[in-house]
Image 1 (cartoon, rainbow, N blue to C red):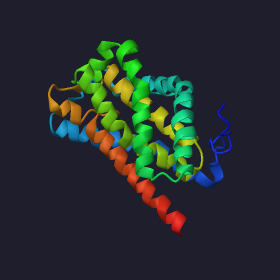
Image 2: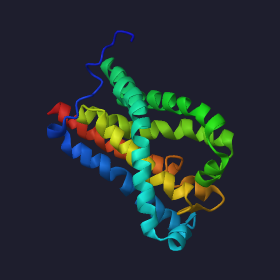
Image 3: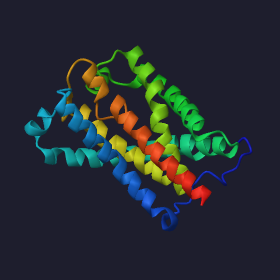
Length: 224
């Protein structure tokens, strides 16, 4: 609408050239969630009692429903943040770290009305032990870390769809784990650090490290 056009939005899937980044999009979140949950169990920060009560097979249809339920919503999010904003900031040669920080801050700001007016407080309590103000502050600290992974995935693949896929998988795993009681956070700082979702500190740091790895790969590819 502003005249930038659609040329670098990343609408083409680029499957032939970027298939391995689609595989990365599928693998990144399950690995990070597994590592985070393992640490959470080791440090008694989370409980998996919900799995023993409901059965592991009960989680699968909820995860599938979460994936398909996120697909349309995440088209709007990923086309805005990674399709448009990341690519425009990259086009003006903003450093990738500054790109992810700025994109992450805008991304966090966009969520604030949802947190304040639409998010069910029971759902919030399942996902974090923080108060609402502290939860919002943490979002501004953590989403830039996650934005590095999403942004680098988009730039490496030259397509918005791997980032969209990553976002769907993140929602599909973390939301039912916590909202449906398969994972319970123990009170205290451990639940904040080791929550297996986007509100967890360790989860976000690991996402940032995945983004840093993809950034190093991209820099090597550009230097070759």
